[in-house]
Length: 400
Image (cartoon, rainbow, N blue to C red):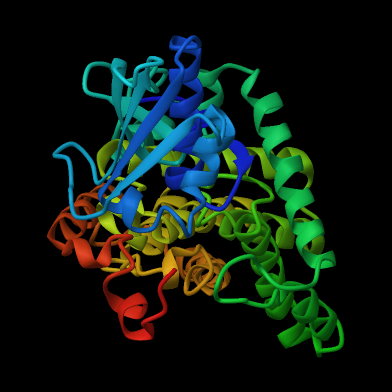
């Protein structure tokens, strides 16, 4: 199983699969074909259906040069390997193809092709939660210690950088007002929620501030700001909101937060390995559902939960998002994406409380719910997997 560094990627929104992945692919193709006169990029399936709203064309133009690239859109054509596919072609001065590369943006900013698993370097001997829990129990270790054993002490520097970017996104989002880019003309809400929340009584204040933190990061992502995928751009507000909340109101130290990030990263990596974190492949259950599982595990650990209670909280985070569709209006990572981040953060705290009331024993294991999510995603029609043709996107009727 790959490093948790692949789950926590620092970059700019609004989409890890539709913005970060295609940009990375274009940059790699450029380095391979620097002498090309021009380029042609064909976007397929979900990448084409919601690419304009996700700024896919803008990302590719920045990488290859707006005056050197022609982009073709084929939303009705789905390649077999993954719904987020693009073909990059290098052209000579006569318009003849001199090189081509078909790439798949599989979620979280990761890309693969038909020959090589470009992003996968195995660092973990186990790929199931059951095996990891067995190791932790037999060795008297915590889940974050399992991460340290396999990643090495340098993982803390990486997670420290990721946490600082998360914090900065929260703070920027709380301090920024105005309208998000795109046809929805959607107003930012984090700053207003934050101002109102501070006037509430304690019982309501904390939960309202949690909403504000999640909105802050999600709005920064929607505006193309710097964020950390957790596990994706579209779900990047959930985990930072919960961790920032724990720092502010439960005085969790940075060391404890980094340990919680390690555990959260392992949860996300397990889902990515055994199912998917791509909204285009399994719907929003793979994005916000996984983010909620990650945050649920992290906050349970920060609250003193056992390894079994942490697993239970993570399982609930994913289980109670099963079947969640990816139906962004106008292809923008705004509605319903931003609000989903806020509510998933709140649910993570609920899962923590519920898990801590138990002894950690429950019927459905985390591994089983991951497999259920994968099958559920497979059974969802393409309409509900990041095409803006079904669900809220369909009934709202607004197109780019």
